[in-house]
Structures are given as structure tokens and as C-alpha cells.
Image 1 (cartoon, rainbow, N blue to C red):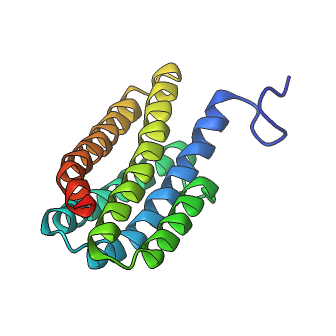
Image 2 (image 1 turned 180 degrees about the vertical axis):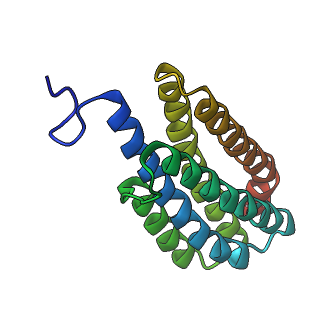
Length: 167
């Protein structure tokens, strides 16, 4: 019985396909974060994005390793969701003429990306556990914790930056 689609016949195939999308997601985020650092006028926000860029480079390496273990290759598959979120962020950044409003936009866009990543890594971690891939689950849990921390940090920064933008 083909439960998911013609190309994804079981949970392991879905897991592998989702890892490939996670790799694409992280690679695209690595390309997008330097612009977010550059466009940030709030020093704490720029630092948060800079720090997360380095973490994201590590996520790329970890996901590549998981894929090589699972398939012998570290090929990615297009993540349409992150492509859309990044396009939306780029549009919003261009539209925000005021620097403080741009910082608010950067935070909102960053959090939308983080929330997507949290959903992806939470799901992958759960599937790895179900599939008996305890090592994978631990790696994915570590990435998930970093994504949750990045989101929490953006929330803290937003509490100050949003008030400044409203003033």
C-alpha cells in the first residue's frame, strides 16, 4: 500500500526526503542571513543573526552527515516553504523604509523562519525515534534546541525593538 505518494512509500523514505528538504532549507538560510545582518540597525539583532549564521552552518554539516549515513549521499531536495518565507522576508525588508520598522520586519521574518525550522526538526526528531535512529534523534534534538533558543532570543529583542518602532 502506498501510504504517502508514488515516491514516498514508507516512513523511512519520508524521513530521508524530509532530511533532504532540511538540508536545502539550511543552505538557503546560510545565504539569506548575511543580508539580515547587514540590514539590521539594532546591534543586538545583528549579533543574534550573526551567531545564528554560524549555528546554521553547523546545521548544514550535521544534516549532511545524517543524509550520508542514511543514503550514502548528501543531496538536497527543494524546500518550497523556506523559499517562500525568504522571498517574503526580502520583499518586506525592501518595503520597510524606516530603520526601526525594518528591524521589526527582520525579527518577524526571522521568527517565521525559526518557527518553520522548529516544526521541521521536531518532526524529524520524532520520526528518527520511531525508526530506531537514536543517534539521529539526538542530533536533531540538538539542532531543535538551537532553533528554539534563536526564536527565544528574537522574542527578547523584539520586546524592545517593537516599542522603539511604535514610538
